[in-house]
Image 1 (spheres, rainbow, N blue to C red):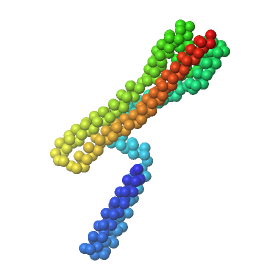
Image 2: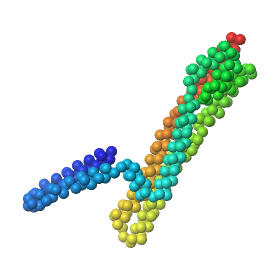
Image 3: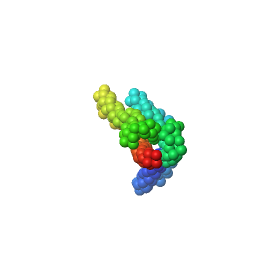
Length: 263
């Protein structure tokens, strides 16, 4: 994208110079026109030097211009938000279970070894689905109705564990733009204080102050966008696991009813 902007800037400059040269040919002598032509490559060299600047140096420059105070707080929001998001993603990946395989193993264990064998299979399998199965199988002697209530209740517990720390990610998503806006307001106040102290409205002073103030807003919005992407991915992962748990729980009840009828 930066290369595209640089290319458009160079093309615009060359077009402007070419237009000025054509007008000058009508009013001034040929020697003046020849002197103006060598000046056209200069903007190209400047754009090339700016384009050659590494990305991390550009980010460092923007961070310093925005002010270490608010930019540091926004950066901390990004770091903590990403840390929690990565922890949730790893937890959810470890919580994912092949439910079809687990159901087949539980059914086979029930047929061959009874309830204790099926509980052993669930104990050796990680994930919330296996934990729900274990709780349901533990209540088998009390009847199918009790098993069903136990599965539903423990399913709610597992859902809460899956959604753990999601509120913190949501907090950082909301906090980052607010910190950016606060930095912008404080930066604008500082810019007006500089204008008041100078006693004159200088375009460079006003533009520079506004630019520095808006950097914090942009940074806060970027952090919020990044964390929002992770939040939505995690939320969709949780919904998928919850649906899997519900389907698997229904299948477990059906298996237990079938096993009970065989006895």
